[in-house]
Image 1 (cartoon, one colour):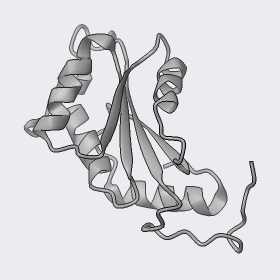
Image 2: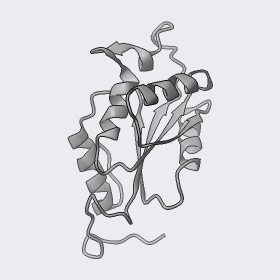
Image 3: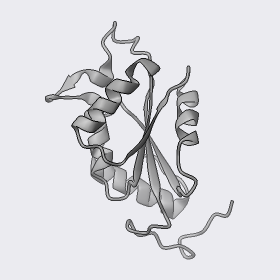
Image 4: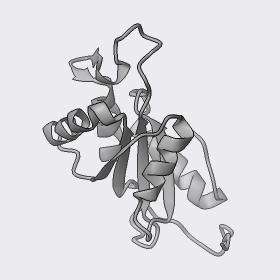
Length: 147
């Protein structure tokens, strides 16, 4: 793998050679909230995960979205994506026993031509589109970034 410096590569959010896939990790066991699945809990009239998905859907720098979900909620996530018009969804994969396994399963579903991967927690609905855009831009500029 070759790492290019800022001088060698100029990132623009419309650069088709620099595709970005967001992985939304939603494979948790929902055990800490005494049976309430926080992903589907109501927040201002929408499920928490819908807010998260809509934030990434609305970002011009995000080309595709892959969701890693518990096997028992894959169809629920699919329905939410349809309901809220998540057109960037490219796959929903089954999460693993750990967060790392869930991320790996999602990474395996990312297209080969993807230049960058943004990994996000499905239960973090308040990340702004501006923060996502700034983090993607920083990742391209410096090789990696965290929001």
